Length: 265
Image (cartoon, rainbow, N blue to C red):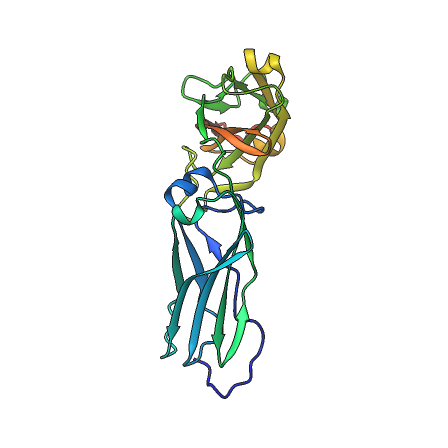
């Protein structure tokens, strides 16, 4: 608690966040438009005995106060949550959400968070799973894999019935220190250096017949040694909006030969 006599210093109003809205441009995913979300405001750094919080929604030139609360005892929760209902997001277009916190009789305005509301978005459709090439019968890449792993591998991308010519295909490959692609409760099994993204605009031939996406040994495979794994997930985007996402494909990696160093080091 800061004494009321202390001089004002710095800005108390940190940025506001919305659950499920991570796009830098503020595009609200279609499912969130249907279900609503939660806006979150972290407790401001300096609290007093007369704190006053006001949350505003600005759209089409109209500013609306959507939440207000006073904290006369100076007891402010670690996080203030404000429901943002589907009804609040009915009108397409750009909106801004922000808040003003007044403490020690000084108002501080938070940064304005832009939001893009677009109900013409298509729901993200499930896409057929990609397939790792040349796995053994147990789903492993090993020192006996042929072609040798240093030559890279291929992901087989199936026919894309949802796609149109020019749609953007993006494949993300990620490695893990677990046998089943489990990232860990706090991402402790993720191998940051074993990651790559491959993107291309699809041709009619690729859409109608599928294609193979090449994945290099470095960086995706080389960091994975003993009972590790990698996953592959791809998305389709149209006009910058994701319209489909695949289930994850899994490959296990075991490059240890008993009594010897790992192969391909």
